[in-house]
Length: 201
Image (cartoon, rainbow, N blue to C red):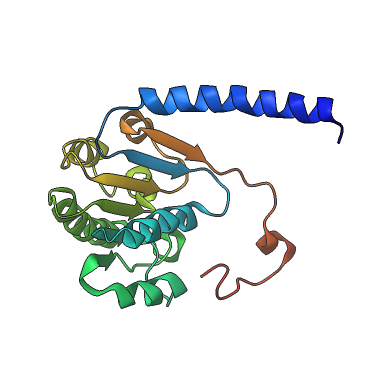
């Protein structure tokens, strides 16, 4: 690479640094955030758990409520058990929505799981609360969307929340500070490849 190209590259990177530094300087608000990870692609729970593990790395107190999963052993939950009192975990443990055709039983299970989540969302000891697959509870009206979003909005100021699941409803998107949508481009399952321990669960 000749000197002229190196100089152009250095100037371009300096301009980028100036823009990024200015944006960082403008971000002066100190509070927890609401993150929604939605879309039809694989990786929503994985993204949320990555955030949870990051919080644990900072010695923070975290809560995880899984509204669908929980009937089978998952590697991340086995691993979380090592963190003791810094992790509070609750699973609705009814399986995926298509595995049950009993709306009333599922609604009651969802309400019980939400009661656990609500305790975490009102407790300022929690730095982060992950509400995994929450969107399904709102879509099937197992939970009241207005009550859920009001509780999240009224959480302690420094607490952050990550909510996951397909088809996040407008009420949830409205209170979110960050929204990420994962698109399904290709999935091994559609090619007949079985789910793998350590990759899919």
